Structure formats: C-alpha cells, structure tokens
Amino acid sequence: MKTVILDAVKIVIEDTAKTIKRMLPFIVAVGSLLFTIASLVLSASYLAYRLADERAHREKWEEYDDCGLA
Image (cartoon, rainbow, N blue to C red; front, side, top):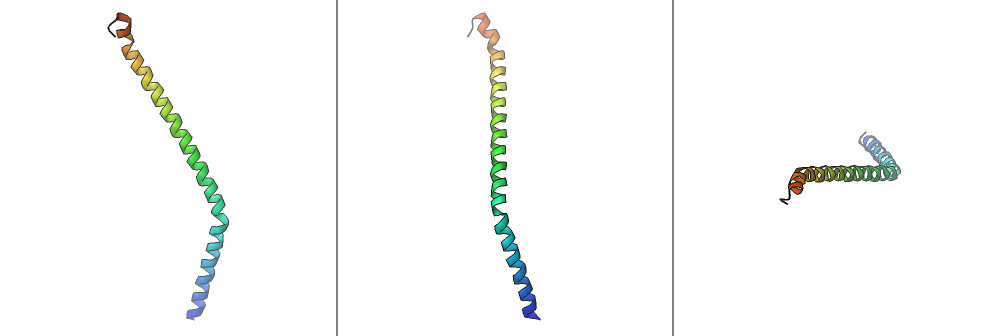
C-alpha cells in the first residue's frame, strides 16, 4: 500500500515537472513583456511629472522675470 502511494506521488511530481518545463518559456516571455510595459509606463509617468513641474515653476517665476527682479 505504501509503495502504491509513493508511486502515485512520484507520477504527480513528474507530471508537474514536465508541465513547468513546458511552460517555462511562456512564463519568461510574459514576465519580460510585463517588465517592459511597466518600464514604459513608469518612464512616461516620470516625463509627465517633470513637464508639469517645470511648467508650474516657469509660471511661478514668470511675473518676476517680467518686472526685472530675476
């Protein structure tokens, strides 16, 4: 009885290992794609933040430039 259970567990483990080996390239490809998309989104967000910050800074100091204090 003990060997039957051990054989069943061994078969399940082998099947799981085969499934993981077969799906590994897909998992790597999806992970790479998600990383690339996240990088692009973060880069675009950073650029939008910098542009908004620069614009606010220019608007704040525009009056001082006009009156000659800067």
